[in-house]
Image 1 (cartoon, one colour):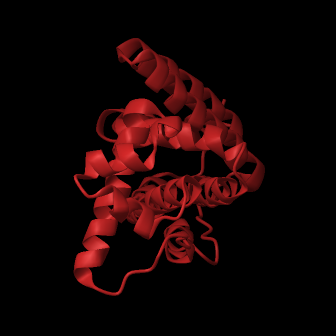
Image 2 (spheres, rainbow, N blue to C red):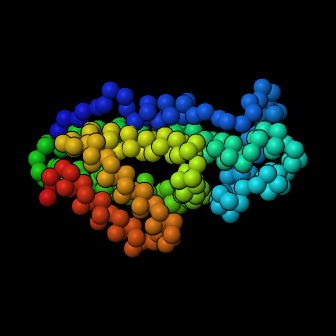
Image 3 (cartoon, helix red, strand yellow):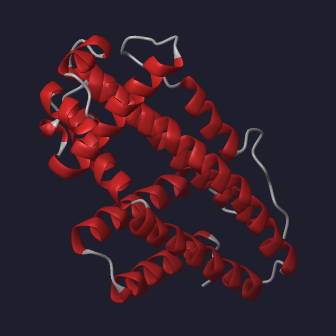
Length: 238
């Protein structure tokens, strides 16, 4: 099988997203000031995970961050600025995380492809192995980044009412979408752009259901069956 690599890989896209994130709150020049601002953003994120976006108030964040109330209003003139910068930080960190993951994933994919001979049986095996990789990714997200996924869902809902958050949500979606596009292009999808939209929708739904229902072994089996069928269809492997 031959592999096609996009001009700008998914890792590059993720890094570009991280670098493009714009913060709304007061800029800091001193290290101590930046550390305090960071404390406030981290505290706001913990509140989002625990109480939802509506739980983020200056007084609640100050108490969680163990800083004076005046500190939160100094760095963030209103709650929208605080929420936007909290999610902006999440997007930047997610982009850095995904850049590393996609860079490693492409190498694994190329190794898998090199083992095959392009036959239907080889493509079927590739579909099985990529499906397993995708399920492992979802399960790892649910087990090690559960709080972040909860916060992400909360911000997605709030973005329906807040244009600035909506812009960040769209930027965040590009990270997974471009990664899926690269994965599908590398393994030989004839329609990688369309298939990437479907794959990301499947993964996002699996993450949501995993959060809602506390994914167990049965849920993992269902995920694997669904993604295996999807990838067999994509690669016309059966």
